[in-house]
Length: 494
Ligand code: MSP
Image 1 (cartoon, rainbow, N blue to C red):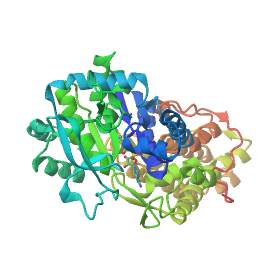
Image 2: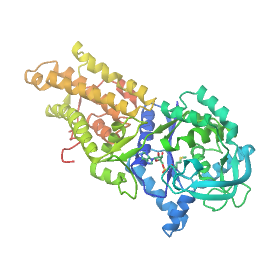
Image 3: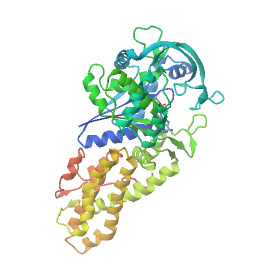
Image 4: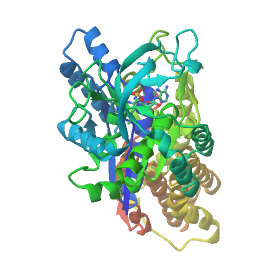
């Protein structure tokens, strides 16, 4: 009954943008869904604060690096609040608990570590060592400028893990998702793994290597260890491993290799259980172009939320592209989703049904003895969560929203066909069962939406006197009651 989910921890050299908001929202949807489903959830996010890139950003800002980290990390925390991210733990890699966990991990993998020296290229933008063959005119695949590096370093015997990793991918076909990315990783590992440089000795902004003055851990081993820290390692190793085994790491496609190759190799070496799954999502462009500071087209979630509201942005990001694929952000596309899906479909359904009940003094008279023709909407409402559950268990988030919108459309069509206002005029006794079925469908929709659009769904729960704490409430029958006054969910002027 445990479900753990993590976001990548974000580099603090720049301010949060829509890519960060995206990963956090997706992980949040999974966390919220599983909580409502009765699971014991641990959801972590946080900031990745060490490494040469952050040290230089602090230097450029003329700030002490500790002060700079506090300031920048706070911005990411604010982004989490802005996006309504229901994290249980916000971890910073500069915290004492993390330094302790990272050093313990190092000591557990020590048998696979040896001292040598690294001579080659380094890309500070991605904090990654790059091969000569990947460099074009001094530029790494990330678009960053490479730098020559020559220093004494520790290495991890990654080459010893090639077969063990391939065996794990083979025996755990769901370990890496989506499948296309899984195949890429398998091919990468099959092509041969070189030992990995895991310490730096020419700067000191990092976790000190145990018993070795002058070396700090390579920022990626430090960063990956955050997942153990948040699970209570090393103090509670059994609990931490249990959480790890039930954990899904949500990561962007460009950092999948670190999570699906290096991370499991470190864990295998340390004798710690591996995560359940690593899901790689795609990248957002803006109006068809790669987002970049120099082009000036980086989408700022604070700006978008202040204009359109948090649920609109969450909905757009989760619906517009299939999770795992790349997508394009534009304000036009966002506005269309708000007008058509949110205001015209969802908002209209909720408003027309609940305002209709309100006109009858808010009185809802329940009648579950309805005729065959209402059965389909009733059954689809009652089955909505199990259909979503199936999709959410595969991280198929956009299709989960498609299924909810099918029910929204079916309910709107039901209203158009049955015309409750005409039944009311003729005092037709079927009106009570029509409204009962519609309340069932709106309640199911609100529960389905609760993980994606928590504010909107809470509003609907309030309109209908629903607690909204657990999917189990859907099994309850409505009883006669008075509903409070509803208000439009997505007012037109927005
Ligand atoms: N610090 C590392 C992660 C360590 S996890 C142990 C890192 N940080 S990052 O801030 O550069 O990126 C964090 C996440 O944001 C990555 O998963 C990345 O894919 C995501 N995104 C950054 N730009 C993005 C888009 N334009 N679109 C979607 N997500 C993107 O990497």
